[in-house]
Length: 80
Image 1 (cartoon, rainbow, N blue to C red):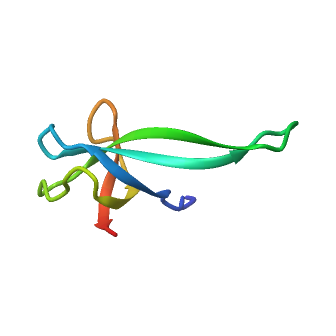
Image 2: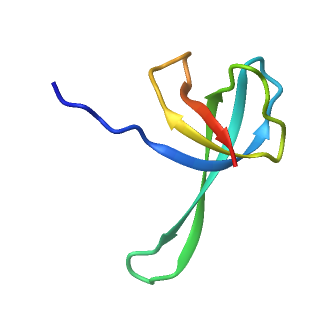
């Protein structure tokens, strides 16, 4: 049996209107393969916040986990 390492991402909370769920926006800086220009790609992940402690604007670290709901695949580890 192989063990997989858990993916950790850092982002900013953009919504906390759901119960025990926050939406985290993660920005990644990429480089274009041909033109070598840097650009920012944003991803939004729903993360499980068990005690509803996160508010909008908080910087958080999220970690991949087992599927919690239809589109929740991350949990909030800590506030930064």
